[in-house]
Length: 258
Image (cartoon, rainbow, N blue to C red; front, top):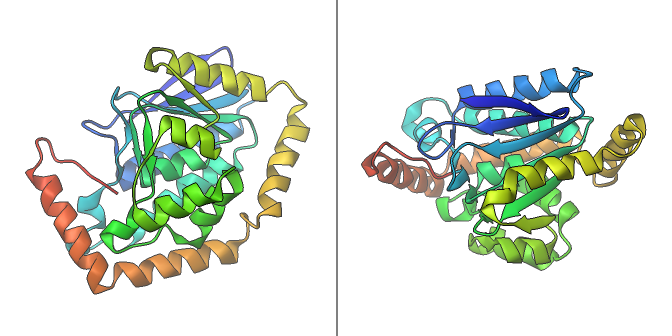
């Protein structure tokens, strides 16, 4: 599910779950373990999170797992939050190579990285509202901590529409936009560039930035997960997820959209 390679000390983790990198609990657990191992490996100087699928970064959480009749409750969302926080706490430089669609949970993983390099055809969205859900306070706050244009975040989460690569760059949610053929190289280069400072200081500054926004406050995350659970149990989310699961089952090879 995750391909591993190295490029001059930068570990590249590529999501590889055909057809669209749906985030199953198994994939998220594997990702969290890989990030944790890389954090303690002195040979790893930086990390790139990418996709082995050329047209999609990730379609988000697996709808069949999150659907009300799956019996997993909100465990998939909790796994997603754990993976996001593992990326955010990674003490070394990290870059998301966002190619194609980064939808909902896929974009949440990208938000955990220090930088985001987009291919020119990439789009990102947090459209939980269309499924009767919310990205939650913690992830809205994370988005606002990165955005040059808070209005873009507000429009994305309230309307559920995507941002094109150029719009994400203007909003401050993307750090660079490059041709798709140059995406991986540019993301590795960005991780190396971020690493051109003393590593202990870099890790400390990352902690301080998150502390300034309250993003490492356990109460914030528990409050946000609790709010997600309350919405997930409601009629609007049950209807929205059931419809999304039905649509996914009708698509060739399955497919997931959260």
